[in-house]
Image (cartoon, rainbow, N blue to C red; front, side, top):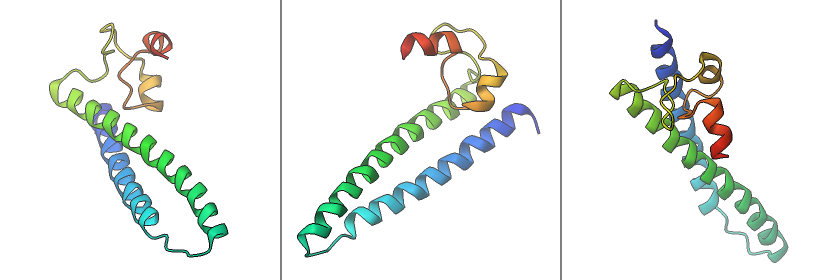
Length: 108
């Protein structure tokens, strides 16, 4: 299996994991039916945390889908901003990254 195939599999596995997690978050958010005001306040705080995790998950899903599209187009592994090859070590850590380290610092 090539490095590209390994990264593609890792991206697809992570996509599945995130999809499952987001479904769990959705189910948890709609399951609250507590009539006790104190417990409802605690649940609302927990809901805010879950919503934040859901938003982060959706952003990561979008980044993974974009990386998979770059793989399909033969553009994976190159910075979408400057066109330079992204370091293998960076792709090992962040397989969905669209930027080389230099451009990532500029974007952040």
